[in-house]
Amino acid sequence: METKFEGGINIAIKIPKNKYEQTISFYKDILKMEVEEKSIDNPTVSRTHEVKFGGNTVWLDCVDNYTHSETWLELNVPDVPAAISHLKNHHVETCDEFEKIPDNMHWITDPAGTVFIIKQRD
Image (tube, rainbow, N blue to C red; front, side):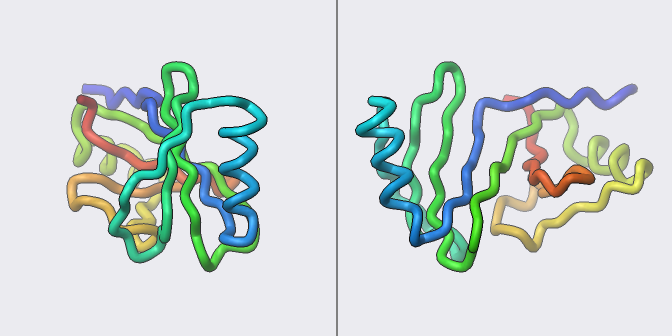
């Protein structure tokens, strides 16, 4: 069976602490989007805000140790172990040290450095 990857609804933008408040204001006050702070218990993300972005959700994550922003994307698959096996067969390794996530999910990057979370399709 061939592994099929589909884009998910979640997009995370990792934002340096010194740009975080300005970024929240941009989405909330300038773009007039729904922005809501959510509680988070994560060792690498100190704050997060949820933004409804059409059919997607953008997570604005404050990261204290970043010097520039990064965009992280979600990929959904029907079978996570099969997808990881497929990726490894194509020389794509997991990078689970990036950020704490449940054991049934994994981080990968594309050749340009874009980060993706691989998770079970809902």
